[in-house]
Length: 145
Image (cartoon, rainbow, N blue to C red; front, side, top):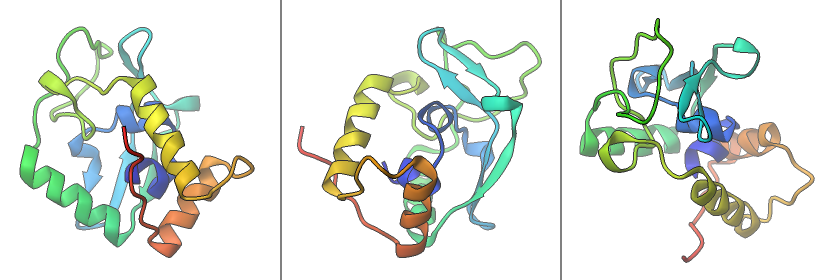
């Protein structure tokens, strides 16, 4: 949830984020892929726009902790498909079992619950939410399952 709220990336972009696109020293992530859960494919992000997004101290620490626990991993296994010319060398940041992406509907439900808990409200878009999390170091507690 912190990745979505701290950066304002789209859900598919968060699900397609690989460790090689995370630079903890420079405190930034590079959005290079978006995961399509229907087709099980990694695609370029919307408008084929590769972009760099700064990350705050809290998200940097969370990502470092996760990286220390799980390591760089390997690219997602089948049924996930990559374009033929893809040069992916590491695993997904939000990997589930066998390095595959999380179930998007479950992740979306948890994200929406976190937003409700944080009283963000529906009038804000993902960019405003990301900016809010970055500037205030907001802490979110996941909703109980």
